[in-house]
Image (spheres, rainbow, N blue to C red):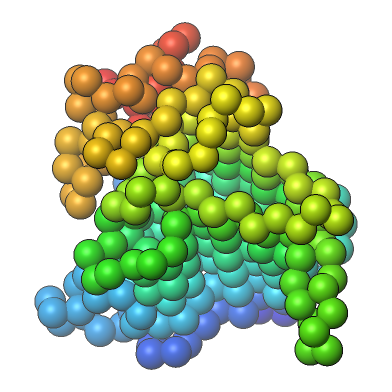
Length: 289
């Protein structure tokens, strides 16, 4: 994609093995509730219904700009969204009301970019759900990240990083200007689902604000604001962690969100299914009816 491509509601895009969508200009995916844009592999026989790795990725390359994804279902690839280095202060990609499911490597891979993600769900990725790599700026609000990958996984689901090693073995600093998780759920099968890979020479700013988090980190720090820690045997209280991420009555996420976070973006007044949020919102992408 060199110029501007608009994708209308209810569009279905099928990609062959190893195929990618490469964006050098601007991509606008404009689905609606009930008429989502679906992006998946091109094998439609039933055996491939839930097979990961059938296609490669949507890659927002350096120089792409003003990309928007609203009401999309992106599934069964290697990487859902790969957003590369941004060249201005505006979000390279804004993602709302979107489901990324069943990726063999990662749901979202950001590399020195600027992302804004609201009301979205990422589930079942072979390594990471979110990679904030090579610094950058990231915002996630009212998202549910639930990684119950059944094929064996060695990595935590969230990776934050602010450096890289070049071809000559020299460490290059890339400041993590800000990574913000507000009213989000981070849950999965590992004892900790958050990995912090920090070089002390660079900026490394991250915050989990009113989140439910599966972590072995100390949450009594400036990085965690009124967040709920899930220990190894705890869970976020989904009705069915594989098929239904609605919250059970006893979920710690119910009524535990911050209304100020909800009010910070118009899109957050309703959840991903169109349910209006209350003055004591639930944490995550789904408000319990």
